[in-house]
Amino acid sequence: MTWPAVVVWILILPGIFLSSPLYLLYLFFSLGAFGSLSVLPGDSVPLVPQACCGVFLVSKNLLSKGQLSRAIDAAIDPGRLGLLFAFLFYALFSAYVMPRLFAHMVEIITMNSEVPWATPLEPTMSNIAQSCYMTLSVGVALVFALSGENAYFRRHYLQALLIGGLVLIATGIADLMLSAAGLGSLLEPFRNAYRLLVDSEVAGGTKRVVGLMPEASAFGSACLGAVANLVFLRPCFESARLRNYIVPFTILGLLAMVALSTSSAGYVGLAVFAVVYAANWLRRAMSPDAPQREAIKSEAIFALSATLVFLAVLALTPHALDYVFDLIDGMVFHKTESDSYAERTMWTRVAVDAFFTTNGFGVGLGSARTSNWFANILSSTGIIGVALLGSFILRLFFRRCRAADPRTRELASGLKFGMLPRLATMALVGTTPDIGVDLASSMGMLTSLTSTNALESLGSRTRATSPARVRSRL
View 1 (cartoon, rainbow, N blue to C red):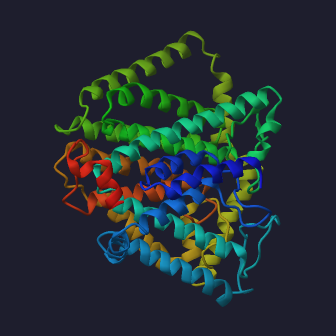
View 2 (view 1 turned 135 degrees about the horizontal axis):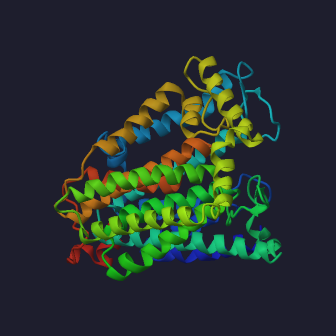
């Protein structure tokens, strides 16, 4: 166990004894930037800090007075998390049964194998590890679905997302500066989990910024997810100082980190984000009660001005951006010519072939490695798993928030739009079937906003939203 892992345990310890779970909430999103650190000793199954903190956050909430009965009600209610828990139970069943039922009858690329070719299916530790990660993600969704009904918690949730984005920027800057100074070895104690690709370069010798993630694609995707959350949820921040200054500054920093990661998944995600942003801007422009409507015009002016400046630069100095265009061309449009693309495509192809070989039953949660999260869910849990999880996700997007407060309705809409770029990147770099605790928290919040008509107003200052009330309900 390295010294950063010890520090993580020390940071988590106070949250176990504090009466309010808000400390663990902030720590949970802050630790999302440390995806290459394992907090367990030895070469056992890696446990990253955010997952570790998530275990205590879930446990603390569910063991609070009166919460367990509410959790059971939400888990079995088809209108809330019933479909997600049905998927979880089937996924756990598939992790134990399918690798034994189809053992040596089908070939897959295993999760942890260093062998670059398909091997016969058999039960492995990955089935257990991925079952634990999936259970944790669903547990996080459950906790946020229960806590999201409280306006005080939702305000802290937004601020925790902001803190998480700032920590991502800080780790990216640390990786960039220490690598440039030849001091990259100082970050090695933070990198003891998974197979790392932290020293890779792109054409021209440019160092890819990976922060404290296992590889550039993971860092770029994490930054893109944070950008999507903050951009679409910015109108929901109550504090004008946070909404007008800190949040935009964080968004710009995260966009810079995505660019410096030179991740093809991040670049494609940015393109999807631009389309989704335009759709959300039109929605807000046509909604007479949308919060912060005065910002809609300024956003349009800023986007138009940036476009005009970009076109002016191209017209006056046509070769000034050649390096940038060559970089994007190599990382995105000619990605299909790279060895990594061929390898990742092979992972997905073998997994999909295994799905058909098992007649649509799948090879079990955690059995196969892919480069596409949707393909992983399909190959791992089969038609039944896809139907259950797909129904749950589609239901989230089609159900409306009927709260009286416009800002609360905007929060629900922002969560929906914010999930789309993250799902797009998962289609490119999703090597595991796990939903992920970040996406699960959004799903849980969205469930709470679309499944109750008695939501507290996000801007309310009543006694019901006091810290004491939160401690009694969370």
